[in-house]
Image (cartoon, rainbow, N blue to C red; front, side):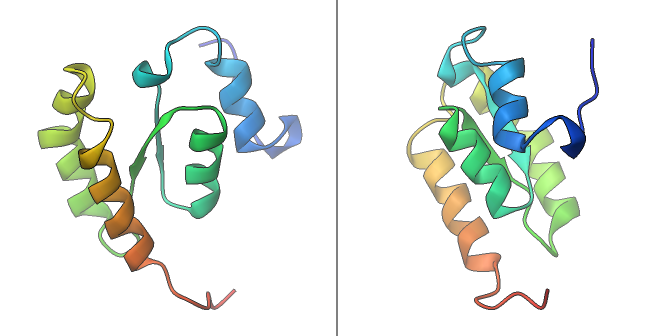
Length: 99
């Protein structure tokens, strides 16, 4: 690790671009996040996305450990599996956030 970047150094999209784009193939980049902006950053950089579902954080981390990482390293994450997770994530988000 050479740098820990916060918002003072740019957006999540920019951080991912600087850290990984052009250094790794898209199917070898996995953004883990808990917000729509994390998903947007991943897709803007052609990376895969693993959602941490609000209210189900422990379950999400457990699934990453027990299931998703194996699929990612085996090259079987992209496509239907990722789409299923993103659908669950989208369904968990409130229509009108309280903030």
